[in-house]
Amino acid sequence: MGWEMWLGVAAVAISAVALTVAMTVWSQQRRRRRLDPPVVPADAPSDDTGQLIAFVANPSKPAAANLERTVRQVCAEADLPDPLWFETTIEDPGVGQTREALARGADIVVAVGGDGTVRAVAEAMVGTGTPMGLIPIGTGNLLARNLDLPITDPDEALRIVVAGADRVIDVGWARVLEYAEPDGGARGPARTGATGADAAGADATGDEDAGTAAGSDPEDISAASVEQPEGTLAARDTETAHIFLVIAGLGFDAAMVADADATLKAKVGWVAYFVAGIRHLHGRRLRAQIQLDDAPPVQAKLRTLMVGNCGKLPGGITLLPDAVLDDGILDIAAIDTRGGVVGWAQLFGDVVMQGFGVTNDLPAKIGRIDHARAKRVRVRVEGGEQAQVDGDLLGRAVELEAWVEPGGLVVRTA
Image (cartoon, rainbow, N blue to C red; front, top):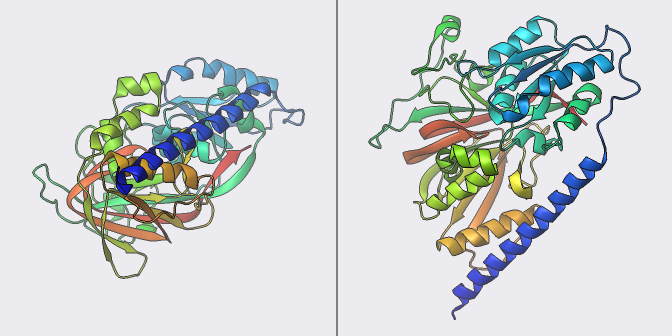
């Protein structure tokens, strides 16, 4: 048996052990949370001048069915004003409802749903200074994981909404500058300098509405409307900026999101993404040109490029161990593998173990992660690849840019 095969066997073994450790830690944390029943704090506001809480809920989530009655009961027991309750629609997954809640004087707006609902609510909250709460009842619940909020206990999440503390975090924005045509060709580059009238009235193609970015500089784009159902942003719009709170990606990760089966997601949650990823293990490596801030572009071969505001993923995996939600910078991971399944196994083991502060310095690695940090990143790939923001698809992008807005959002945490 050659050394390459022994390396592959070792990588698979490391991956299995790492996953077992991660799932054990996660199970213990979940068990500890269940031991502490949700209670209304003694120092909660005692009169109707307390905080007005608005909830923006995705009614397609089964867990949302009984939550309205629960939140009204909890607010009444805490002597808070009767909360505002809004439901998202396919036409508007949360942006408009959040703006209405703010117009009606809400002191905190809570996203009740998955990552798509969180993105939509956050988009309308950026720059307002009003805190956003989370009751995560989706598949990935990415931001909630990175804020260490309970993801399996809506009652505990509600307690944090009522009695938690506020934290200022960064947000990321991503924009597709050029789309791939169905035949592999490229669609024209983005037009810059959109006027205020364009921003107010432009419509995206298809059944979804999308606001147009105002201004030619990405930093000038604020709260571009992304009014899509969770899981897809079908409009091929090269002017709209799409918010992300956790990770934007181009390549393997987005293809995995695109192929995830909706029925399987409903049954097994985030595991459906890994099942979808198996189909792409032997996919082509991307030829990419990457530019970080004002540095000269560099050429690279990779499977996926991920740009993160924070780094925790489902299953106890930490993709970006140095990423911090409020450091004013993005963390970039260029991921590449060779050697088929063996390369992916070694890479997976490295990803899991780096979350525990362990790095793999073995020679002749066939899977690798190169880390970098920047405030802005631009990537171009030959032929185009799927792109995503926090699990919502942007389509097949030839060129994508992403940047950070420091301190753009206030969130309610434990």
